[in-house]
Length: 152
Image 1 (tube, rainbow, N blue to C red):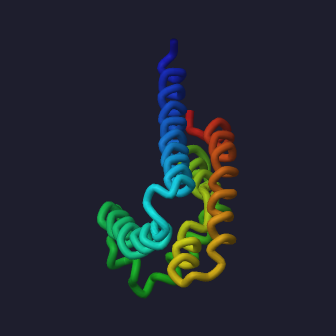
Image 2: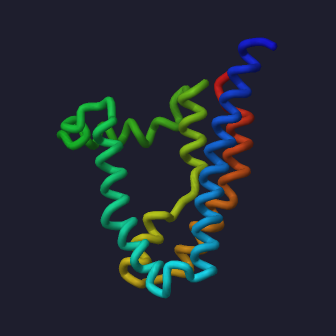
């Protein structure tokens, strides 16, 4: 077997393991919710936990591990930075950068919207269903993107 085949196989295995983990967490959450294991206030408590603890923790983790200087992110160059980010998809991308942009664009939406809906008790079913639908649809989409655009 060639080293390219082994590298591609290992990469695809990593992608599939990532999907399996996400699917397992979703299935476990669904079962816990349906069976009422955490009680009648679990949705409210878990929503507040995600909104007030997990989202800020993720933000600080990303900022701490970022290669860019955090001071530059909030400098007078911010409008230029935003313009560069928004124009990124139309630049000449190929290989890993193209794969990363397309894969991130295909990720599920509305998790933060669901947290806000839950926090302020507005349109929770719509936000919840949007998260479910976009998550279910993103899995086959990401598999196709990985198969077509993954660097070889």
